[in-house]
Length: 112
Image 1 (cartoon, helix red, strand yellow):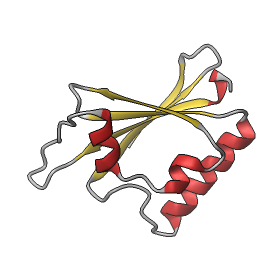
Image 2 (tube, helix red, strand yellow):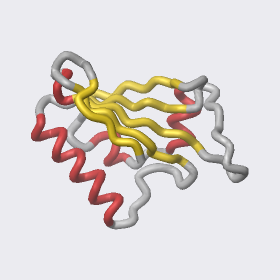
Image 3 (tube, rainbow, N blue to C red):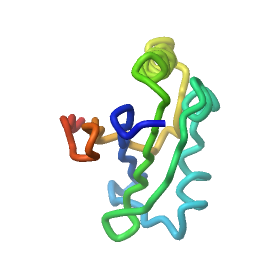
Image 4 (tube, one colour):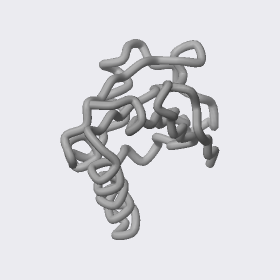
């Protein structure tokens, strides 16, 4: 796999009182996010998880073999969204994505 086909996605859990949940561990974050299987397995990405922002953000890093697989994965996840199929738990906010350059630096960032 190559770093040039890598991106990072950022997630937080918003509670009913509008506060942000603090995850107790990466495992807790994975459980709370309840990602759809397609999000985790389509095109067989290498996935790594980390907590950031005082454990209030789950950072999911996806690394693909090539751009074709990365774009096919993006299409599969977009199709989930477009068909109103939940690909994450309802109280989980997907708020940022970073696309990486070959050297691992950030190529572009989109914040939602």
